[in-house]
Image (cartoon, rainbow, N blue to C red; front, side, top):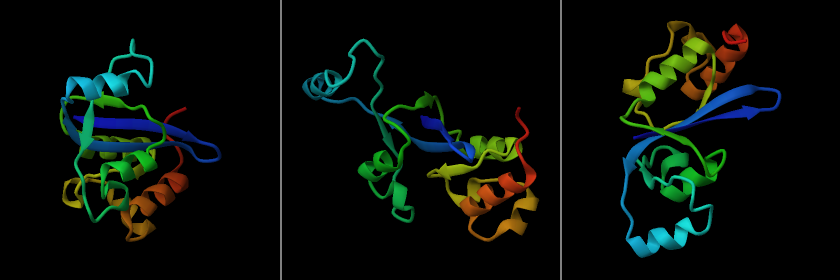
Length: 134
């Protein structure tokens, strides 16, 4: 699965967060306790992200939730994070959090002029070129 969220940041606009991972089944008693902490009429999917000790936001599941924009996200079937990062570069939406390996990510060659740190270059290139969407 891929969990994603677009956050609207004042003065910046939309930014994407995404996490690839898997759905999990919890013990029914644990599910019941957690599900009652919110509105149990809402659909619930238990999700665990793929961790990456090289990325602070993905060193453990608590770090992921601490960096996540809210306690909700959209979940789609399959690992499509690399495709979403490419789409965001085309739409000029910076990606502020992901657990995709660098080798799997395509960004336009023009992004190379905005620095060697890929996520920072995302923000600088998107600001420079401006949004495609209106």
